[in-house]
Length: 105
Image (tube, rainbow, N blue to C red; front, side, top):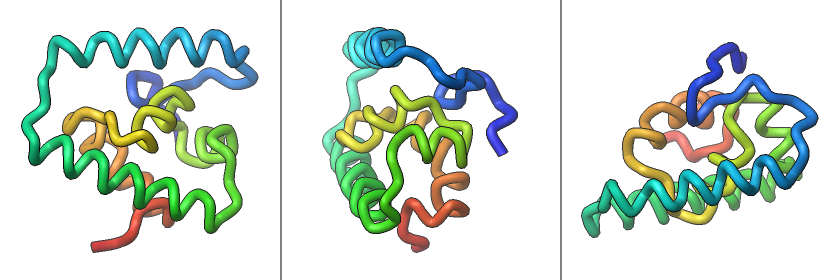
């Protein structure tokens, strides 16, 4: 499923945690250049919490989800924390819903 290799997707497997953390920090710093509206922040937060609940219920790690969906582990951490940008959510939403990692609305 994960044939894409541009953010928020990846084609990296067995990547050291330090590299994932570096990429995540870099992406979080970039967010300062893209301020989000209050509504967008709320949506991001709500979807992130929904994702975390579904992930927990399924007993999946971020690595499991990366392997299942092709989504970058760094993105999954950002998404779960409610910090994903609207464009990132839009790019990942369908694969997460198809994988039953977001409630279907």
